[in-house]
Image 1 (tube, rainbow, N blue to C red):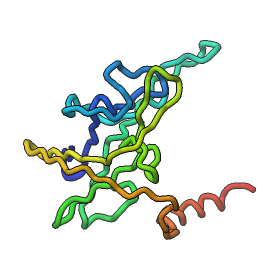
Image 2 (spheres, helix red, strand yellow):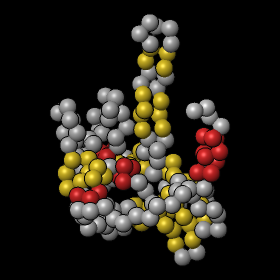
Image 3 (cartoon, rainbow, N blue to C red):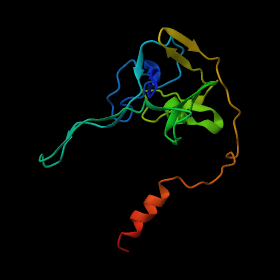
Length: 178
């Protein structure tokens, strides 16, 4: 959901919500699998990174840690680009870039997605028929046709590049003792 010109929130249907998957704190409606649904209820994408716990000697406590993974960075075409930009607003439209992980895609080269059987200790996957996107802007809700990409056996060609922060990292590293 694009909430303002500078912020957006990625939501997921309850069946696909993986909050608490590794910590045993997920609810019964979270199925961790591709399940046909009417969508609702929608929940913000977030990750549970740890649980409330106490050190073995009882002297320290560690709180529950939740990362709001679905808070997406938005920029306009006139702003400086960043690899963190998930949504780019341009005169001709909106570009959306969402990492495979946030779409529950476990292996994009084989179109494999999370499709877990919660009764087993492991995590299962299955072949996906593709991804559809629902975009809500105010009272207008648009759903795209399902997009299915071509599987690949060899990684796509890439171009190596240095990110702008590399110079700052080099400078800091040069001050560290050997």
